[in-house]
Amino acid sequence: MSGEVTFGRFFKQLRVKQGKTLREFCAEHGFDPGNLSKLERDRQSPPQSRTKLEEYANALGIQEGSDDWYEFFDLAALAAGRIPSSVLSDEEVVARLPLVFRTLRKQQVDGDRLDELIELIRRI
Image (tube, rainbow, N blue to C red; front, side):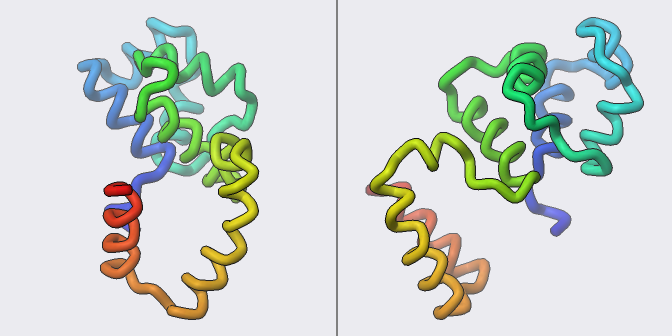
């Protein structure tokens, strides 16, 4: 799990990329350093409020509609055990999700094979 991308790790990566310490970032944007510290260390779940997530995304300089934007919101949804809304909005994809889940479970796909599958999907 150490290499796994989580909401907290992604958040911290983007903050550090701005060259800001946690306290500087919080002071600049009016956030509580204690709460953000817990968030970045995955000790606190990400907010599920779209408004709060957008506030954080804007503070982190994430461009709406960018890959980072979708990853940020997807990671927040996944942390809550939800399928990201961007996926749920496509009825055709949602209709096929049970097949994907059954296939992955039945095949007992390991990390390497899952990476191959992801790469194959990206090429489409």
